[in-house]
Image 1 (cartoon, one colour):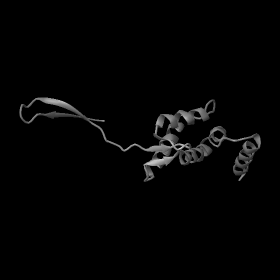
Image 2 (cartoon, one colour):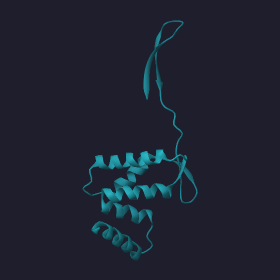
Image 3 (tube, helix red, strand yellow):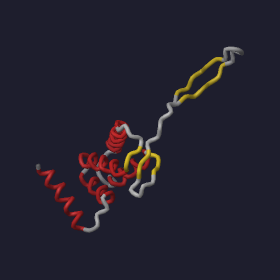
Image 4 (tube, one colour):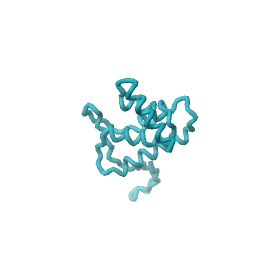
Length: 130
């Protein structure tokens, strides 16, 4: 928000105006087809839950959130499927903390059983060894 002091050209009284950049909101297309406005707090909350009780500094989490939002702003479309956002989050979490990545992936991908969960863990372990 920008605060400006101005002066009336007729009566010469000074007054304050406040200006802010008007942004077109990004809409998230949910899995069930609903659309809702993108909310940074929800994104941060999901990542914080995934990183709970992990040795990840809040500054790094904030940086990841800012990076994800920067990535979203590079997309021309104003409507972004939640699936795309989830994939971006998982990619960033994979480099930040592998346990947080697995936590987020287990909720995001809705693993149906332990076998699916184990497959994801084995894939992660194979990538770590390389």
